[in-house]
Amino acid sequence: MKKVFKMNILHVVPSFAPCFSHGGVVNASYQIAKKQVEACHNVSVYTTDNCSERLKFENNYNVDVDGIKVFYFKNVSNGIKNKLTIDTPVSLISYLKKTIDKFDIIHIHEHRHSLAIATHRYAQKNNIPYVLQAHGSVLPFFQKEKLKEIFDKFWGFDILHDASRVFALTEVEKEQYLKMGVREDKIEIVPLGINLDEYQTLPSKGKFKSKYNLNDTDKLILFLGRIHKIKGLDLLIKSFNRVSNDNVKLAIVGGDYGFRENLDELIEEYGLTDKVIFPGVLTGEAKIEALVDCDMFVMPSRYESFTTSGLEAMACGKPLVLTENNHIQTWVKDNVGLVCEFNEKDLSECIKTLLKNETLCETFGKNGRELIENKYDWNKVSKQIECIYEKIILEY
Image 1 (cartoon, helix red, strand yellow):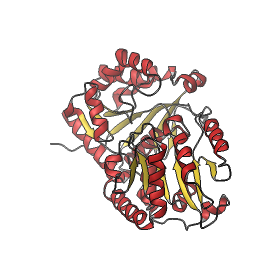
Image 2 (cartoon, one colour):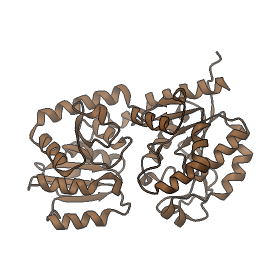
Image 3 (cartoon, rainbow, N blue to C red):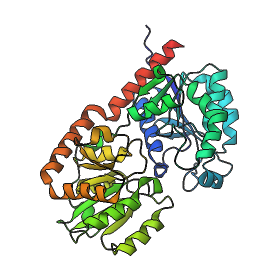
Image 4 (cartoon, helix red, strand yellow):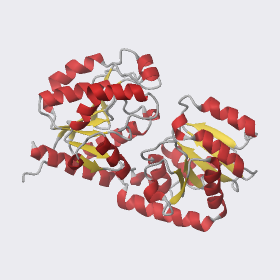
């Protein structure tokens, strides 16, 4: 078989770097594309200018982002996008028609958006293979279920079924693809990863605590992600109230997605104002400083397909606490952390267990670091994706 050494790759995603505040899909698509550039492939991204505020560049239609050719198509209305999650990049369609035949393979991130509709249509017309990575959004549940079901009826099922391969983050997501009628031989388990190089030399302890006036002796519980209802932060506040004392603090790191006010009300109700801090969005060294200073990482989600920030905590040698609603709980439980039911009593008991048992924390931390090095480094994940691409191209 002839090996493909250099590919022309197109990624299609609703939002892209530098809009990392829009969550894990933005970061994952950026990391994958960047690694492919490093492997000397020609990589383009078709996306929109949507972010919390409209992205602005001198030339929105051809921006170099770390060697990636990124085309930020203008949404007719970012208000519609932010309120209804409907993208309106009208000029994308004509540009896609003119350029799609230049690519060997297309990688669509998520599938319930207008960019995926257009890409699916012209990929089919031009016989260009594509892979689909749903990033935890395979089934139409949690918010706007009826709209998602309508989308699937008109477009979603075709986008899923016509993909050469679909990427599942976990075995749980694989089962979800099967429920949506995707053939099992089309499903590949492809996890997310982190850049392990960024975690080889960690900052010294105490920098984060010093910035936020915490004592060196304080125990620190850390959440890192979007402040959104789906993340279960109301449950975390209620559970934290059960374990709270003068030497235990909680840091909720991330951007507000309409749920901060609910948390502020709970914090005031329980009298936790001086024990909970909101540093906002942290990136780079500042984020790693928070991870280094915490005693545990907690992700109390109502639903979670994967936890990239949990991988980052593992890279820093920290134990995890997850609810059983997180798909990665199957390999986290009693290996790199604790898993609880979605209720405040069970979550608070897991937190108490780790606060009292430093030896267990160290064991979980050591196991987590080893697992990151062996399986969840972006270098290894990107090589897996490249092999899948090559196999598909050779099939066409």
